[in-house]
Length: 609
Ligand code: AGP
Image (cartoon, rainbow, N blue to C red; front, side, top):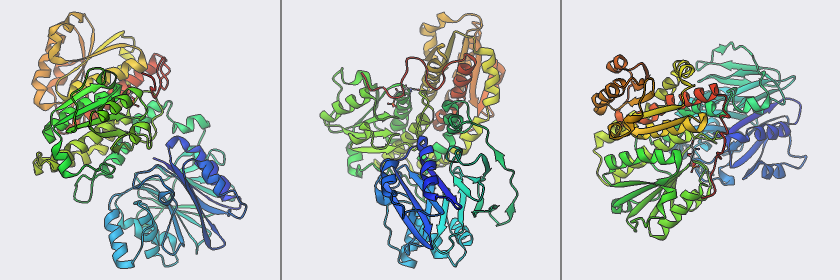
């Protein structure tokens, strides 16, 4: 996630950039840096840790200038150390870049740069490649060189560039990562997000995918991929600073629901190489060690434990190893059967949940190998694990977990498929098929968000309910549990999730006229059975809202309402199916006037037993 900022004008670039970076702190970061162009020379300062460290480094008056770029980094490629912090310089030190996103083909570009231009890399990042690439193409025209460099890159990026030889400009370019340009008086700005600029200007241009921007102190020119000038309306921002942090959304929960396509892409793409092979950075298990594992425990709390339920299905299916999913608060009190052939997978967004941490310690004591799935770099769970696979969801501020959950699921797919391959269990064509399905996920998640208006209207009808049931079969059971938790925590409605086949063993007694059932029916293999379950509850005069894959028309005939998600393989459906459920919980809570981002009695990270 992290952020970029740029300034060009007559004032102090350093001051503006530091203020801008501080306003982007909510995006999360673990190092920060600034590059300035002063009298045809690039000055660079960067530091790991908090922005105060960078402030100390840039404190002297000789470090300033009228043009510069800055960045707060959240470690992805390479650890959060000074060398990996941005900006990155070209080998001759005359080009500086900041970059948000992922350069998917960076290894290929890196070896090309090493082989053909003898470049020695100073960091472990994918981003450094960009500085060298621009430098290789640079013949005195920064915008031309940047255009040539991005034509070679694949991935997602928002990039800011300055060149020592052109002190009168900043060039920026965007694809699948946010970028705006701000209009000042005698100066202009660049940033990842509006909050960075609010102290300076409220007039901005939204930069679109594929566009390249030339910023000087007096003008901002936007070009499309063919270098044709684009006419863009100025957007005047009327939000206050607090609203701007929410990106114009009313609540963090909604913002985070909408960030899911990008978060899924970040979590996924970094782990897939050119050939679609999974590389689990931060996971050091060897093929032999993967092969020795004879049991997996997935241990977590709340939403993370629901991700674990999906993880069980995935690991058992793709890796052929038996998996137990345990609530962290129960795990260490029941003498779990753990030994040195056990893989313990701890899942925690915050990485600070005490129950999960204590369970991890217990498993470690008993000899298990500890692999964690975490969203917070350097958190306690991450530090105490043997291996960590980070979810790149960016900071999650709303108490209700949304993007952390979907990225935990993505991580579990990666672990299951990789483990299956290392153990020779998953067939190659099956592996390839699921990778392709995963690759299509960010776009499908985007399409799923379009259900919002339909769901908002449904929420208007159902928000007064005092009880809602969620049912499903197979992987839809985990989704039902998560959907139900989402609803109860933000709306305070008493909701209940149950495997559909279990209904008739007791819970069916609760059905009365107009009892609301949300039916998850995304599993083709279990579709017929779910239709029967719908008939079963409808016969007792329940009201049914179904969630199904596009194209499944029979379900609409038997349900009162149907929400469609895009077509996808059964195994992938949980990631898409939860999105409308998050939206439903959000709108019901809003109509009930709840404190959506901070529901009563709840905390974002539960550091007590
Ligand atoms: C879900 O919306 C909650 N915020 C909660 O269940 C959460 O998932 C649980 O407390 C675990 O937190 P963690 O992922 O930070 O360990």
